[in-house]
Structures are given as C-alpha cells and as structure tokens.
Image (cartoon, rainbow, N blue to C red):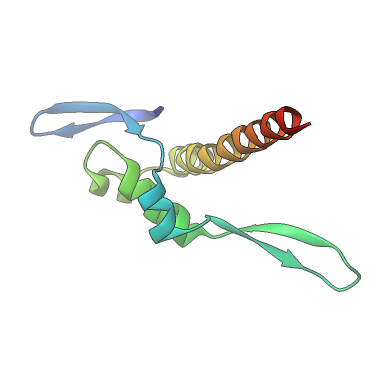
Length: 109
C-alpha cells in the first residue's frame, strides 16, 4: 500500500481526510485495465514510453481506499503524486519480475 498526503485535509461526514491510501493492483485489475503506458516506436528505430492518463486515472480510482470522488478537485501537485504512486506499482512489479526470472534462470543452470 502507498499513501499520498493531501496538501489540505478534505472535510468529510466521518471527519477530515488528510491522505489517500492506494492498494497494489491485482491480477484481475491488470487483466481488465492493462498497462498504464505503451511503447511508441519512432522513425529511425527509437522508441519511448507514452503514459496513458485515462488508464492511470482508472487505476487510481479503483485502487484508492477512500471515496474515489475525493480526487476530482485535488490540486495538480497531489494529482502528480497519485500518478507517481500508480506508475510506481508497475515499475516495482517489473523489477520484481526481472529478479524472479533471473533467480529461476540461475536455478536452471
């Protein structure tokens, strides 16, 4: 789980909310929403990673523990922190996957 502290608490019926908590994506989340980015190939053989904001938003709304509607009016710095959390889940998962694959390959030799 990851948290993002709000710049200013939001008043809710149950009390103020000062941070948002995001759970890690599951297999089911990933199979429905896919990657939050895509690789774009450019002329000359290069490529770059293109973020997909709509998919990042869907993940953020699905993974947040608090009411997803709280996010609609958050300021840009908070929105960017949420984006970083969502993309971080994927970065960390890919690193873990590479480490697991490396361990499996070394066992096979």
